[in-house]
Every structure is written in structure tokens, then in C-alpha cells.
Image (cartoon, rainbow, N blue to C red; front, top):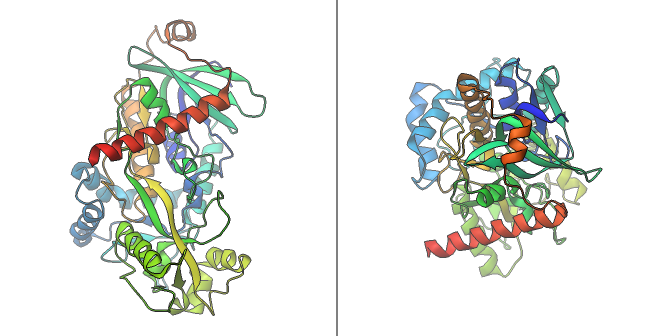
Length: 436
């Protein structure tokens, strides 16, 4: 890593990668990620990505998104996302993303909870992996982009509400380095690593959000945390929960109680289904409920959900002959670093995109398969905003930045990161108490 870049992007999920793809090719860009590029929630996304199904679909898509978010969404952000969705899908296809097609060659569309119609494009049950892989292939071809994995964000270099770069840790060597940049983009992903049960990779602990809290950057709705209704039950605690896509229920799977009876409408929004499952577990005195995938049909299960079928088999469950145990787990973060529709935060030269940010598009509860779409779109908008307004001011030299910033103590990086977890958990609890 050099001492100075035009843009630093923290995170190599779809938000970070798409931002890099749309930045000017004459700018030197550094992408860092805490683990490997595959260790992002983007990579894990199963269900798919929403696409507006023509003008006649706009009203229902808008209503579905607002309803799932309990009408706490930012209407401007929702409108922007929905109307831009066809272009986002077209761009993904242009970089090689292989979405499922109908017999006539048109994009296939599935349905998930909270949607009033089929509008979700998908690639089997590993849409996130397909998109992330193809974006990474495109980014690695760019000569102006450097990618450093196993590199952890420790702090922002900032002074007088202006971001001038980042303090990072080389996970392998333990070396701490200060890197100056004209613009910094936070795309650090979710916060599931701070919870005992989560579908997220354990290393995703909300560091970017915690650092913004520390540095006085506005953060909104830290208590808006989504629980996914159906993850494969395991008695082993502390490991990442395997998500069973909502698309399985969209294609006909049923939720059953201990007696084999259906107990809710499986296609309600996630928070509603989660509440129904928790109540049924409490009433029945069981640590899980059952998901019966047999109504989907053997052929559809095998072709559309091969990864889920395989993982269940590894755990000893034959989905073609018996229901599998499922339980809710933390899944997504609707709160985050406050950002506008171009990704700008309340600190100059600092942007936030993807799950790290809160632009209000999801409201209090995210509608299924809006996450990849939101991350891709607003990351692109951030890149274009940086391009439109790019100014490399003379004071923003390496020497100036390092001499004028307020730094912390980085002698114990692990202790610092543990402190960030506690900061975030405390902020979440305080936000919940304030609501009460």
C-alpha cells in the first residue's frame, strides 16, 4: 500500500466493488477488506435482486417496500431505487452476471415474503456469489485499482469534520499504517459479528459504524436490526447460521409446528413471520419450527436451490422426504451511517454505501431482495458524485493530513476493535431504551 490514494474504499462486497467500477479510471483507488473478498454478506446472498417489472409494477413495488419498512422509509430513496432497478440489472448482465431465464429467454422472476408479485431476478440460490464474483473479475482488470485483503480499518484520519484517509491494520504482519486519501468510502457491511446468532460472517462487526460514532459522524437507527425467519437450526452456538432463502417459501414451502400443522402466512414480511415463529416456539416449548420444502417439488428444489439442498444433506436432512428445523437469526442492519442519495455523510470527503449506511430506503424493516439492489445503485451514485465534485486541495497532502489529524492509540488493535463492538452494542441498547 502507498501512503496516498485518490480514493480509499473500505469493503469488497458489491457496494465497494461497484463504487470502484464507476470511479474515474485516472484515479488511484485502494480497496481494503477485513478478510478475503469472499467473506462479505454480498457473497452469501441467496434469494436474488429486485427488478421493476414494467411501469404497471411501480405502484405495487413501492407499496411493498414502504409497507415492509412500516412506512418509515425515505420516499425519495425508495423511488430512486425502484426506478433505477432495470438499469442496475442491465449493467450486471453487461459484466457477465448469469441470471436465470424463462423458456423464451426472458429474465425469470421469483417471489419472496412481502412482495405482491414475482419481481426478483436470481441465479440458482447463490445470486450474491454470482454478482460478487463477476464484479470482482471486472474490478481486477482495472489498472488503477489496488485490492488489499486481510486489512482492517482501525480509524479515520480526520480533522475539523473533514476525512483525509484511514488508519489500517495489516492482519498478517500486525503493522498499523496511515493512508491519506482525497475521498474515503465506507462499505464495511453488516454488524452480525457482534451477535451470538447471525447469518453474517463473524468478522463483520460494524467497525465503520462504530468509528463514525467515535468521530462524530451522524449515525441513524442503530436499533433497526432485521431478523431472518428461517436459518437452519443447530445446537452449536457461536457459528454463522446457514440461511434458508425466503425464495423457498416464495416457491411454496410451508412452515409447520411440532405437530406438522401450518401456523402462519409464510409470505408475510420478515418481521411478521419471525414474530409468528417465535410465538409458536414459545407455545410449543421447542427450540425450532419446521420448514417443509416438499411442496416446492423435487425438480424445482434441485435446479433452483441446489446449495440449500446440499447443505441440509450435509447436516443430515433430506429435504425431499422430511421437513428441516429452522430458527430466526440476526440477518440485516437497516440503520447505519447517515448518508444522502449520493452516499455523502455528515463529514466532508466521507461517503457510506451498502449495509453500512442508512439512507432510509429500507425504513424499519427491509423488503426481501432489496439489499443487493440498494447497495449497487447508491454505490454507483457515490462514485459519480465523487467524480463530479473531485477536488484535490493543496492542504490534503500526506504531510498536512498526518500533522493535523487527531489520532488514537493503536498499540492494541484487537482491544480497539473489541471496544468498537461494545460501543455499538451500547448504542443499540440506548436506542432501544429511548424508544421505550
